Image (tube, rainbow, N blue to C red; front, side, top):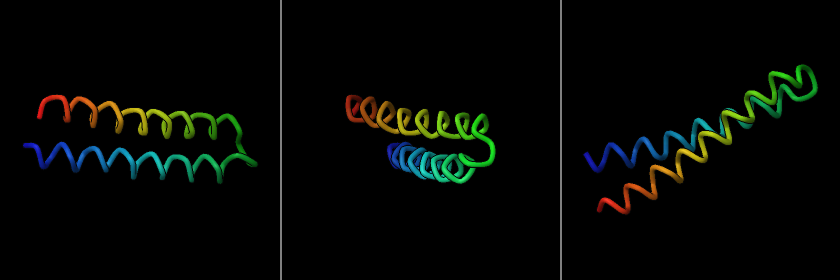
Length: 59
């Protein structure tokens, strides 16, 4: 189970990078949708650090 949580942590990073790139590409065309993508990117990075911190506390 410990191995799965590590994979999910890094999946949050990958998803965050994808959302940041998508937000940067949409910035000039549709700023409202770009804010949403950038917000999801920030949320993904927050979830990475949040999950990592509590996984290390459990170990």
